[in-house]
Amino acid sequence: MSAILELPIINSPAMWIIYLVAIAFTVTLLIRKNSKSKHGKTKRWLPRALIGVVAGAIVGFLIYLGGNALDLFGVELPGPVGTWAAATFAGIGLAIASFPHSKPWRKIVAAISILAHLVAGATGINALYGLNPTLGSVFGIVEEDQITLPDFNADNRQAPTQPLASTWQAPADMPSVGERGSVPIPGTTSGFVARDAGIYLPPAALVENAPALPVVIMMMGYVGNPDPTIISDVLDQFAADHNGLAPIVVVADQLGGQGDVDPACADSAKYGNAETYVTTDVVNWVNANLNVIQDPKYWTVAGYSNGGGCAAKYGAKDPGTFKNIISVSGEQYPGSETPDAVQADIYGGDAAAFEASKPVNIFQAAPAGTYAGMTATFTAGSEDPDFVSMATTVSNATQALGIATTLFIVQGADHGGDAVSGGLTEGFNVLYPVLGLSTGT
Image (cartoon, rainbow, N blue to C red; front, side, top):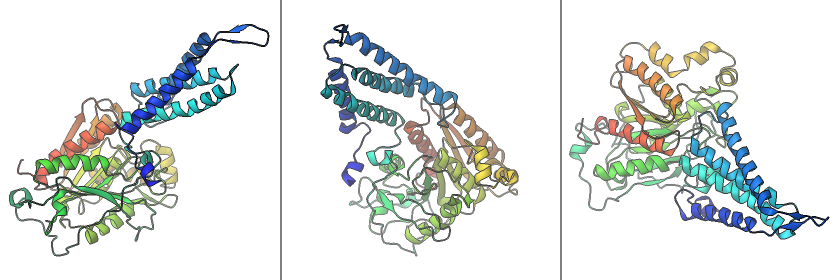
């Protein structure tokens, strides 16, 4: 079962096999002779097949348009999603048209074909977004092996007196890439029930007498998984370009359960103490288990989409822990997609408490000097206008407070994987000299 769940389904043989199976079913259903009704009339197959295909394509495209018009998915779905929806339902329409006046075996093929087209369509849309690289991750199951952590050295936590990039000498046996896996982080203080966290250890963390390194606490989107794949791929490239140096990463689960509810980055009676889990339990676990520098200058809170809203909020509330923020396609504030429900469910209808939880308001209410030495990067895809607007709003607020702020638009990206990898790449371009991992400025 584990091998099946770990099956890659983006730009992989499995993806192309799924597409080819759907095409094979389509061809099988199309190749058919005309049939005769009980009254001896000829039932022409191709016109009926064409009607099924066209009707299905129209239904699929209308579902796409309706999803955007009603904002069912919280973001504007790009055009290629509409193409996939139309193609998927065109195949289903062909299958439905195949049932009348057909032999039993063809009915069975048509029924299986419906499933094949749904799987192919879901695979295509998933590949378009690039956020769920394995079959398991599509269903919220991240099958990363439990990672073996390096021996913890409590005496190796001090901030370096010089940038690591200028003092670090990589040993000859250092791995060329880092390691990623998972580890359970208990909700000791919060009581929050979280899924296993994703972990990334860069090459420099995998050698004997490894240096203490910066750390990133990352959160993914809703609905989503604490999957370290994208950020580890980005940082492996940075490590390759910087002598094996990169931050250690913990991808924490800010959603809990099966990842299908949104606690809005807060503590609540309904969804549990998600905020305390990340800002206390995960932070304490990092300090007790990972060889990271114990100085907020070297700590980054980062997130994508829902996680980006959390990152902005936690960075605003706790600059004594996090001196750096990366918000990739982040919400302007946690709960921005369903504010009425969040105000009712999370804050018990208390509008003032909800307003006070929003990152911009937290930043603006803080005393002068609170954010001295902080660096913040906000990114969004150029084809994701709502999130460009949100990133602009929050970045304007941080810049007005004197925080070293970068706003970066990932050209050609929407709200998918390209926006995540592009946004993280820019975030670490900004942070590498700040964290002493490069000698640039």
